[in-house]
Length: 473
Image (cartoon, rainbow, N blue to C red):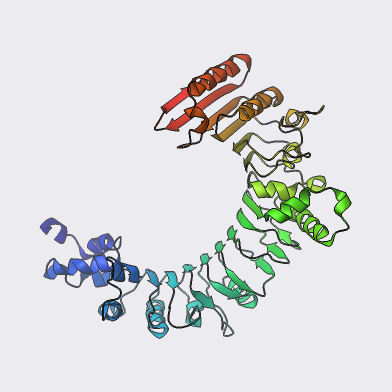
């Protein structure tokens, strides 16, 4: 400890910055040298769970909540006007909102650059109404607003000229407040919106500076969703299918992850034949799904694309209008045993320069529109879409060793004309079929046979405690 105490204050404060504020404060008992050193740390980590929940029943003790509040107040008094860089405030135990506002304002006045807020002030009614002062700062570079926070009352304007990262995770917004917030962040480059509670919102994300956008929600279905982000490079979009996508300005997106969500009823209706078109709810589902073509057309310049199982179901009604992905070299598709591959043939045909195809799971729902990408249904043009696909590398994840999967692997080897490498990965910690005596050895021998009969290098990879690691080449 003597050697450590001899280090300069700046270095000791840097070391303490990796600890929570409570942990850093505990070092004050080491010696006089350490007594107030933690007050000079440029980070402040206020988390009531660290104080109130380390042991069962502590929160219910008389005065324990007040002791937490007093501790934070003392730390701020000790720090005075010392510059601060990062502040994280997480309160979920009924802390007075006025006191929380004082802590936030203290950080803003001291030039905080990173602010992370989660405030569940139980016992005070609705969500915590965040002070408008948070949105007027010339120093904030990163702002994270988490659950329990409501944003309103921004009529005084938003001025965040340095903000580059904005994360909204389970916060509550009105539509006009969000638009005002985004307009007040002229250089924001990264935006994350996760389970944002939207009131009366037809979503529009408009920003000329955005480069990375992540949107995730499973609770809301919007009438429309527009993207006006001409310089966006990365898009991660996971939401219920909107009724329409009026504006999709995503010309420069290079990497996209698309998860168009739909419920079981919508998927069932979408699979039904056209003679049901007179039914109003069928028309609603079909129109909604077909409008997803606008979103896909907007990302037609991507180089890497990830699609979810429900996305394939939605795109099955967009096949006629599916864009050509001329720049796409990497395509990853996640499969589900209850969801179909109806859109797979058209997608593969429309990727003229595809080099790598990754399939997370091969098992999918067999439908009359399953297409020729698999051999689930016997048909004259089986394999036609694969023959025209230039893919060189095929990665198969979550392999379960079923007979159906083995047939599909053989189908791929026979149909992809340019295939040079195939990697098959067993799903970790899920042996299932391989628990059958002798099954693992039989599959290994079959993979060796595939190698002998094909010009493709087939590698069967198992990474599991039961089998250790084995590779057949």
